[in-house]
Length: 485
Image (cartoon, rainbow, N blue to C red; front, side):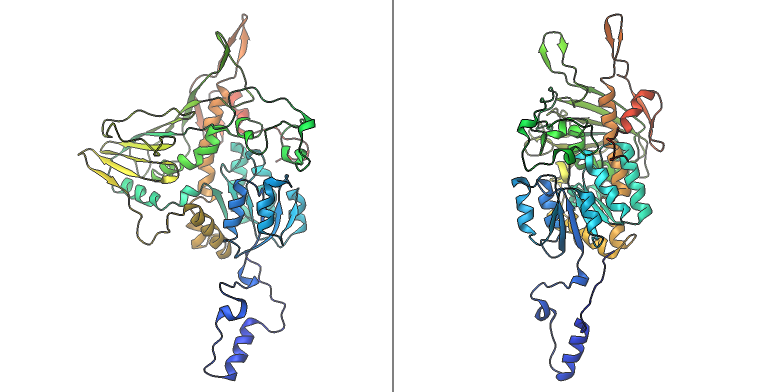
């Protein structure tokens, strides 16, 4: 909640009251007291940021409502050029390398943005929520399913306002697609295609060799590693390439799944999937023998998930995810010259029903409805909705909810609070369990038996694979001493 502080002997209300007695015609506008768009400290949140480079720049800037809220502390393991923009934008904010020290030193913090690599989302968010701070966490909520469940339950128990950073969830075009589904415009959906061109970083290749001689002076590598196992500096891992390695990232699914799968997950009111299976692309640097790199994500994958019927859809749904640039083919209802998904075809969502098809780009952009009778409809933004500046709306809604408090109407109206974003993230990470299980193997008679290349049956409530116990190790991770969750 917002902490209200006013130590002045004469409050603003007293000032207005006294000056109004001097003349019945003299009214003091708010901007006279503090300038145009002035917000008193009692009306502002005290915000901190963990991870302020890259995506962290826009996260903290927009969370501050472009400077209208008070940013009192910034934290990043990189004190160099990578974080210069944010430090310059908020010169009064104290800078830290270790978020634990920052949180200990600033009990007055109301809310925290977290924009770190995936493997430290949970540590930063849990440390913040334990201190009753509202949290905005970049997608995915965390690195693995166990962490996601802990964070979801903690936000509820601690009564903090949470939001995941999949800003397309606040795109008002989502409302149009949800209405199409509710109105039965495409009938019952039985198949959903979701796809991306990711990865756009090194993936499916051997990890670079460690080399401490290349460690930048500005980077605290030990803090960057956080809960991951101790290792010497790996060139290129920070600030971007970490996405392709299971110790740190969650691959193409983790990077884009919470943006793309969010649209059908919300529109169809999906819950935990019942099962998952996959196939993955291989890399050959020698004939007949694919590279075996279980510590890294594959260059491409296809993941199939099934969901039970819902209140909005009477049929069982099959969702097919593809990455690495692999896209679905055109259904008959969609003209051959219509590019599926985004204008370049890189990302997309296609929900196929008995009476038509809904298709759009990632983050819910450019939705179209193709009906069985040949009608083609482009969605319009519903009246009285926010504009299409989805990222700004997503952040501003979270700030308003933080001010209004837990379970307020503003909180309950959030499009990606952990109560929703948690199950969505678990679904995304369920696909990664299948991908990681795909490379499980044992040696039999001088050959390899890849025994987990099967459909995995999922018990979502209990976070458990029911038919392959060894796969359950991927629902969690091992933690370095001092970083346990």
